[in-house]
Image (cartoon, rainbow, N blue to C red; front, side):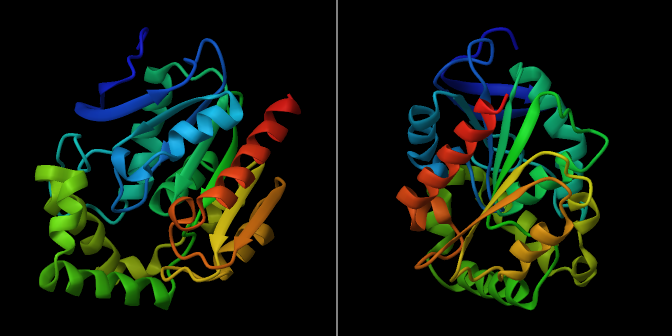
Amino acid sequence: MTEIADDGHIEIGGARLEYRMIGPRPDAAPTLLLLHEGLGAVSMWRDFPDRLAAATGCGVFVYSRAGYGGSDPVPLPRPLTYMHDEARDALPDLIDAVGVRSGLLVGHSDGASIATIYAGSDAADRDRIRGLVLMAPHFFVEDISIESIAAAKTAYETTDLRTRLKRYHGDNVDCAFWGWNGAWLDPGFRAWDIREYLRRVNVPALVVQGRDDEYGTLDQVRAAEAECPAPVTVEVLDDCSHAPFRDRPEATLAATAAFVRRLLAAG
């Protein structure tokens, strides 16, 4: 992609993905690529991308993965390797297509897991992707994760959750929900574990975790600290559940911006 509009669609792997680009383009400043959660989309980041661009001077590229938001749908059920597939196949193509010259990956939940797999795999371009911000990451499956995802299934079937999610996903709402929920609740997913990728993450990382996260415990943070060979900075937030940028926006923005500025200043 030679010219990036403020918003539109970009084609990656035969799928049209909706996106927003805030701030300077990749030829003018580092780029922060935002990777959303398992039920996320461009619009669900709210104003966090805009505020992050203002706080860092970086360009911020935020997009909806295939099957989410205004992007093309995907066939269901999703394979249990869907995060690996995204990290090793789609994300490198996206980084190239956007024209990222230098920057960081900022991932939330599933997006943080995708960022970790990318950074710890042979697909990683460590000359361009110089660090990770991991919000509420999953590195292995915990009982609390499965219990909360099972509760989400009940809510989707019996409450107005589907209606609320449809505001962000439109006709993709069932694709987005069941693609995520079905994979995580598949018995085979209990063996999902990406700590082997943590052991190969050779760029600095910031882990932001809510103390009240209903989808994961502080054991996820401890895994990053124990396994990553590169420096890991940790920010554990009180009065915060699974979405730090929504639950504690000021603290999350401050920690993320400070980490980005420090890392880029180090050259």
